[in-house]
Amino acid sequence: MMFVSLGIGGVLAIALIVVMSVLTGGTVSTTSATPPPAIVGKSVPVQTIRSLTGGSTTTPWKFGHPAALIFFASWCEPCKTELPHLAAYLAQHSTHGVQVVAVDSEVGQSDSPSNALAMLRRYHFNVATMADTQGTMVNEFGLAALPDSAFVNAKGVVTWLNIGPITATAFAQRLAQAAA
Image (tube, rainbow, N blue to C red):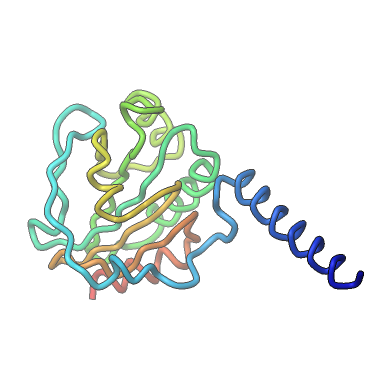
């Protein structure tokens, strides 16, 4: 009888974890404990993608510049918490030459350029933008939920992939790492 109780308890614990994961948008922790090995340390191709303002944006590593790609959507609640902190950090600190790009991975699906731009303006997140309408960037980095941050060095090699919201402290560390 004791083993049946333990089995039921284990099933209930797993069910609770699944429910909490769904309710939090699949994000259980605020930073990635271990970077996914599938992309970190590998080169990613240069992309030229439409910007949210209508022009186009090319990934900075084409021109020998490191990049911090901030994946977001205007409806994403964790993004609404993350972006003001990153904007405050950027207003006060150097990026060490790393170009920050906000990538809306939901434009054309569940987001619009006008909503995305309004969100970036509201939080004073004044950076280059990309509208990843085809999911090119999301697929390249293997992303499944928002927000996420990818750091790429000047040679196009991914130095870090943060799944979930990133803290200003971790953002600063990853900027320095991408710039090195």
